[in-house]
Each structure stands twice: as C-alpha cells, then as structure tokens.
Length: 419
Image (cartoon, rainbow, N blue to C red; front, side, top):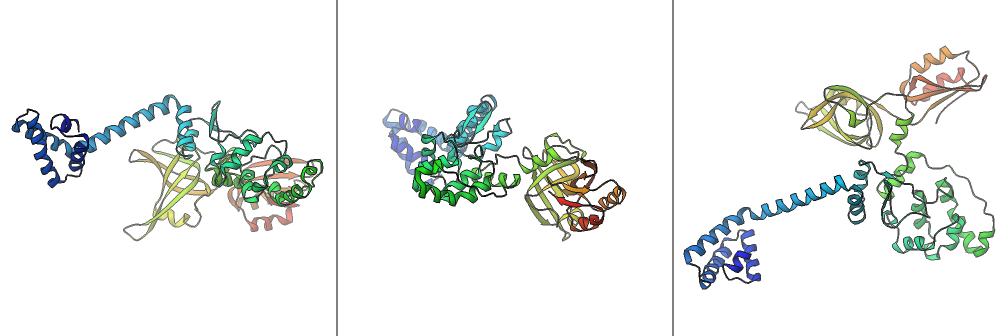
C-alpha cells in the first residue's frame, strides 16, 4: 500500500482497493489498476518502464504476501505466548482464564497450579491466582446472574445458611438460582452435606418468608439426607464450572487401590504396562476383513493416551468398555507418529468400592478364600472379625461386583456389602 501511495500517487483508499484486488487475484481489476498506477507514477517523474517493473514485482508479491504476512504474525504471536506461558505462567493463565475461556484450567493444572476449594465468603467474581492456587470466580457458574453474584460479594460475610437466606432479596429466592451454588460446595463450610441443604431448601424459604427477622432466632429442624458420592460431586462441579473441584473419582481409586500401575507420563516405548485411566472417547471402525476394531482416548487426569483394540481384543472387551468409566488397562506401549500409544490386551474396571465381609471368627477362612478366588475383579476385600474386633484388608483378594458371590458367601458370613 505504501508503494502504491508513494510511487504510484494513489490515495490510501485507492491503495487499499489495489490490495484487495491483488489479494483476490482479480485480473480485470488489477489490469485497470495497473494503468492507473503507471499513469500516477509517470506524473511523479518515474519512467513507464520502471513503473511497469515495480507493478510486476507487486503483482508477484501478491501471490504469496497474504499467506506470508499471516504466517509471520501468527508465528510471532505463538512465540510470545509460549514465552509468557513458560516464564510467567501465573500472569499467562490469569489473563486467559479471565478474558478467554475456562478451558485453560486443565492446562493450568498441568503446570502445577491447584484448584482451591470455594466458599461463599471468599469466592471472587473473576478467577484469581494466589500462592500457586486457582480460585475460580462466580463468573464461571453457568446460569448465575451477574446481579446475584455482585450481591453476594457486597453483602458478605455470612454466618450460616440461615443468615444467607434471611438477607437474600426475594427475587433471588429461587431453588434454580441457589442449587448450583450448593452443588459446587459454596456452603460446605456451614454444612458439608450438599444434598441435605438442597432437600431442606424449600422449607427454609417458607420459614424465611413467614418468620422474617424472627427466623434468625428460631431453631430450624433440619431433615437428614444422603449426600452425593464423591464421583457425583465431581461430575456436578464439572457440569457447572467446567472443571471438578472435588477429587476426581480416578484419583480416589488411585489412592485406595492395592494394584500397581504406571501413570501415563511415566510410560516408555517398547514396554508392557498397566495404567489407571478413564475412557474419554471410543471410535469403532471396520477393517478390510470386515472385522470391528476400536480406538480409545483415555486420560489419567493429567495426560492423555491413545489406546488401540485390534479385532481379536475388541471381540473380548467390546461389551465391557464404556465411555466415562475407569479401568486398569494393560498392554504394549509403542510409538506412532511421534506419540506413544497402547496396544490393549486386558481391561479391568476400577472402583473406589470395597467388598466388606463381616465374620464371627476365623473358622471358615479357607472356604471364604476359595469362593473369593472364583470371582476375580478389581474391588478390594476387607474382612471384619467380631471375635476380636479386628478389621483387616485382604490385599491378595480383589473381586467383581456380583450377587452370586454374596449368595455363595452367605452361609459362612454374618453380612457382606459393597460400599
């Protein structure tokens, strides 16, 4: 554009028209503009031959200039972002989380940042980084009005759930507005049982409306309720915030299991390994021989891995592998296209459950061991003996979840339960 303006005598507007014509390779428009360019250049004292030569150079540049300029700009930006991410990760993620997308939380966690628990009295509006912790803000809660978020920040601190509801303006006194706040744990410091708060919410609203300020001096009788499981808490937090704050079910299993396994980040090429991973996606294809095989993408919450099931393995495991489920996966580690992958040979579903067996004494230990051996699986066994009050983990036994197993043990035990 500067060449067209200073050499050809074009205005900036006209130079931009030339730029667009060259960018779109509009031959008719470019031929017309060439005549005007040569004419304008000659008026500025340049020869016709020289003007045509300069225009030819510009025309050639137009064939690759657009791509080259964008490639340079994107490369420079990518380098600058990579530099900030490597040397100033707190600033980098602070900007991206607040002004781009909460999808970057997972990336931030891989850099060693931790998600801090949220409370109604400390949760910020925007995401905040402090002492290597990420405090997710109210802005991330899907469906939460900005006015209610600002009201919470301006009115706190609150001394309890009753105090919060008493001061809450009537237009926000709706279960749909408050349930997401409860489900992500904002009231855990007052009552850790989230289901209990939710099941009492409608009655609490009635008390607030009928008693008004007297509600603070009254004693509300709470109805008990069974709380969400750890896995349910994680899934609800993930659906509301885009990321789970509670322990991931996989991490709960990893802490409790007696199985030895490797993390994905520790895998090495040409080795056989067992990993603990959650299946994120399953893609089934048909081979040239008409047989089905599958490709899985799995994660251990920090790293991802591609897993291949060849036809013979797929036939054995097709009905056992489901998306979102967690498994101990065993197979051979290979490199493909510069990345490691697993060729799967075995998959056992993992669980944070335990199989509890209550026994009067040690009289039937041998028969119980024989029965447990017949139902191999991934659930650890815990024995409790009433005679001496001892509770013992049985590391040599892991069983499947089976009604038949419980039925076979019934005549030798006082009670069995999966929990």
